[in-house]
Image (cartoon, rainbow, N blue to C red; front, top):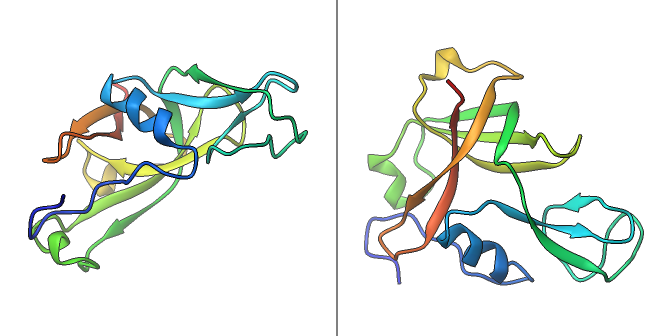
Length: 139
């Protein structure tokens, strides 16, 4: 349960339970289709590329590049008042062109961000105990 004044944490659903369990082990994983070998995000029951139901969870490097970002300066949730400004980033994961995830970018000033910036995943613990993937610049 969220405490008053904190960001909500994800509720594992829509075939994403294994993803969040992997995050708790500090592993960045996604579904991969055994028929066409493509990764997918968001998880689901069928491959969106070939309609196969043969999907396996596969560890990824957690490395990628920034494809776009925004700096949130106005709180959109009561818990965000203490967090702004924060960076929301879209990261293209290196294992597959076009495989993108949305997360937060940490440990960087907004002025330093560029498209193509190399980043890597890191896991931060929510007060609920759930570990959340965020990205930071690769140094």
